[in-house]
Image 1 (cartoon, rainbow, N blue to C red):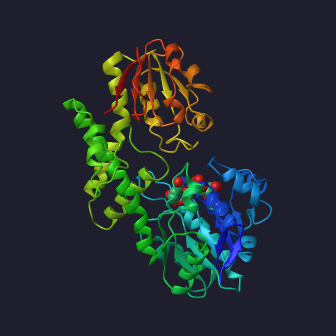
Image 2 (tube, rainbow, N blue to C red):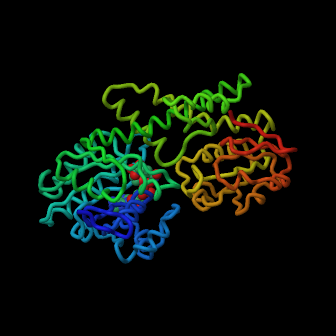
Image 3 (cartoon, rainbow, N blue to C red):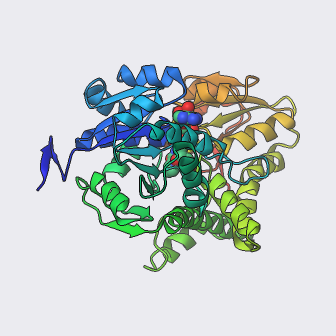
Length: 439
Ligand code: NAD
């Protein structure tokens, strides 16, 4: 028996709490509400709670604003009160951050804190409740870290409550679309009852649900990201070799990608991968492998190649311009990718650092991420228009694949020296402009 909620058919309207209202939490909460469920968000940051309750997204994501406006105050609300959230839901999703520690290993302190608060709230609850880990965590975390904390703090045992792992594969910039149109949904659980409950939440979405145990679900997420990161570093290594040989790597990869076993995606050589996931997830998998006595040589090289790419851009610049001291250079694009204001691990960060270390004056522009980058670098010039950032510069480095950069044309006329190094292989060649591709 299916229930109609606007346009989606769901098996049952469920009450869900979402712990952590960052990219994954806010998008998941808004999309679960859109599917017809009743959602309460929990965060420790009061400003995010206020924004969500006012129907304003705490982050930029295409389509998110519309969903929050539609559901805030109705099917969706936010609070800092864990107990209230747990008492008013049947399933809780842990969506807090899992950053890298100083060694690159996964830092689970936020997951531990959220698990403790959930355990405390569960203590007083009589009804069955399922805790789901959606944060990206290394294999065994759900069973060996989250479950024992919840059991200890709640005084209950697994079975009295359910535990599951449900990794998230959304892409920032397309997060709402990806949540509603996933190519896979993975639910890892220790028992059938909790797995069934989590799987049923997605009944309004047309996608097969892959059922596994929690550690397999955790591994699937890492392997997914590590494979994509490997493809990028592979393409960059090939690109670097091609450049030395005078071969167009994009022609090579376009032909290679026609092999159905390889596919055409993620083969574009350039400045490398950034963002809140690929670098930290590959490093976390390296850390986990090392911890259990395996040396992941390939994964280590994936990170090494990626860290060299942005520095190569500044090397190319120095080969062409000589000393950079006192020279004004434009950095076009600060977000780690287009359509987001997220700068975490953006490739523009090592580039700006390298430019500043070489004494250059940095003139930066991004349509969305200027404010976020100001928190990291307060010693560079920020502009709200591309042409203003390009005025009087000796060269321009393209760091983010923003659509608007593709149509830049007469804006380049205001450069003092018309040299472009394109880290994203996105501009078409123009008269009177010297264009250097990174690879
Ligand atoms: P984020 O840093 O944007 O958001 C985390 C939120 O948790 C913040 O709002 C923070 O205030 C809140 N928080 C911190 N401590 C808390 C606590 N004790 N209780 C309640 N809330 C607390 O993180 P994110 O980018 O949404 O990522 C969350 C997880 O999802 C990570 O494990 C990440 O690897 C994974 N993931 C992220 C993406 C992505 O594209 N961002 C995609 C897939 C998976």
